[in-house]
Image 1 (cartoon, one colour):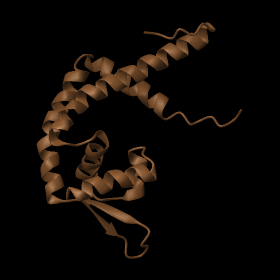
Image 2 (tube, rainbow, N blue to C red):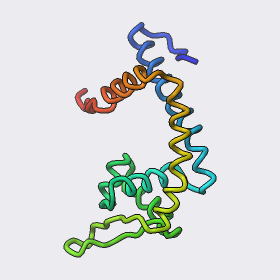
Image 3 (cartoon, one colour):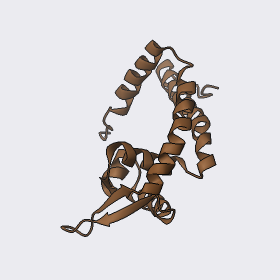
Length: 153
């Protein structure tokens, strides 16, 4: 369903493109993330485990920036992962305001169990597009995602 707004062609094209992008992303995420519920993980919790598994320990602030999450949100998600013994916080000796987040053995084990099903779901979703279309979609998303916010009015 497109916009019901009746504006200029430029406005309607932009709104319809935006709506389709958001709906496609949300419905795809919903289907892919369904596999996480079996492991009692939220999308944000999985994203943290994934980053720590593939990148290694990260400062809490850097983790939040990487995942585009606010400080308060990332703190809550890490608190919940820590309660489940999936991650640990390590206070930086030089500056006690900074925490490094580490994956525990339990966290690594859970991620290794969950990742194959998650990957299978992602592949199933992306196979709806040809390889050429996937590469083009990556390019277009990068163009949109890397565009700086225009603060001029």
